[in-house]
Amino acid sequence: MLLGRVVGTLVASRKETTLEGLKFLVLKQLDIEGKETGGYRVAADAVGAGLGEVVLYATGSAARQTKYTHQRPCDGVIMAIVDLLEVDGDVKYDKSREG
Image (cartoon, rainbow, N blue to C red; front, top):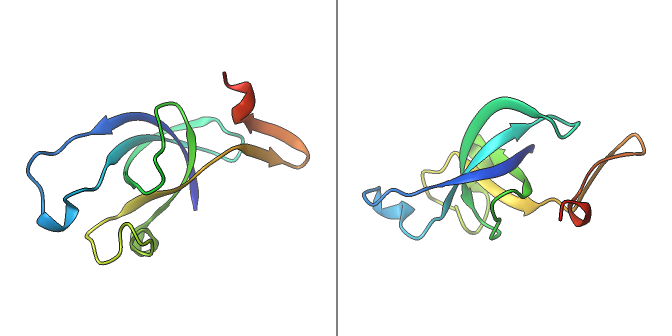
């Protein structure tokens, strides 16, 4: 599982039929400190994440293990919205403080 911040959306009017109904979001990858790493990722949104939220996502075959993405050609899925990220007793991200 990986951390990312939702920075945009992706719309594809023509796509593989099994991808119909999926919402795609653009993520900026984060490290364990909550800092951006410079990489981007597109992932199907299984939890209703919004712009600016920090999320937990999976890639590869693990991305096809949710009810939302099962049996679909999907290589990335958002599976949780992060409320709090604490590392070694230090809070790196707290959704309630983000405003």
